[in-house]
Image 1 (cartoon, rainbow, N blue to C red):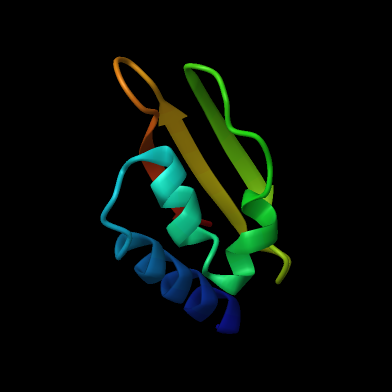
Image 2 (image 1 turned 30 degrees about the vertical axis):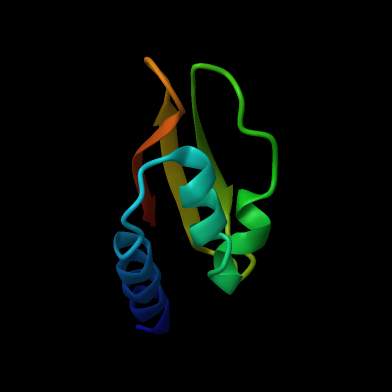
Length: 80
């Protein structure tokens, strides 16, 4: 039950991030303590995706970004 509650809480926090700009999104999402270490890294290229285990264990963040014209944008992000 606690795992499901943690997943809902984290997904609610992610849904409150209004920017889709990759760098701004990463900055905001990294303020969530459970996500910070999972989001560390270099995000480059025209597109990419991650599926990283969170520091709390048993939960993962999935996120995809792309770049067509202009800055890279987050397509989706969720905790499962």
